[in-house]
Length: 91
Image 1 (cartoon, rainbow, N blue to C red):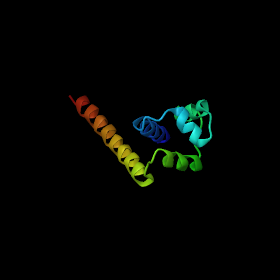
Image 2 (cartoon, one colour):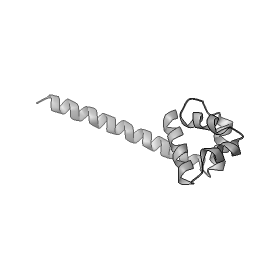
Image 3 (cartoon, rainbow, N blue to C red):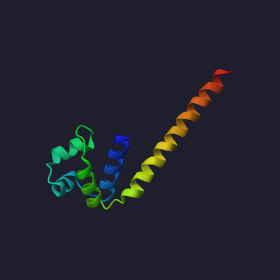
Image 4 (tube, rainbow, N blue to C red):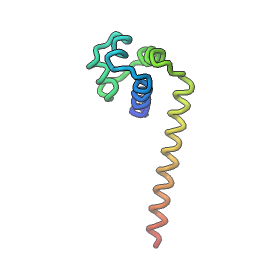
């Protein structure tokens, strides 16, 4: 789930054509520290996540609804994949 959130934040940043350096400066981080956040090596605090959402103009509610929807879609795909494998094993 955390990686999905990070990937979505990165996608939002790229869609705005913002560099890591630009976003990092708005958060008062170095570019290398921000890069470590996007790579999942450093955790993002809630405080900084809220600031990041403001910088990227992300609506919190819509963002997490989308993440939840993606998570549910992945669960369904995994279940379907398992079902297909099981059905093929019957033959």
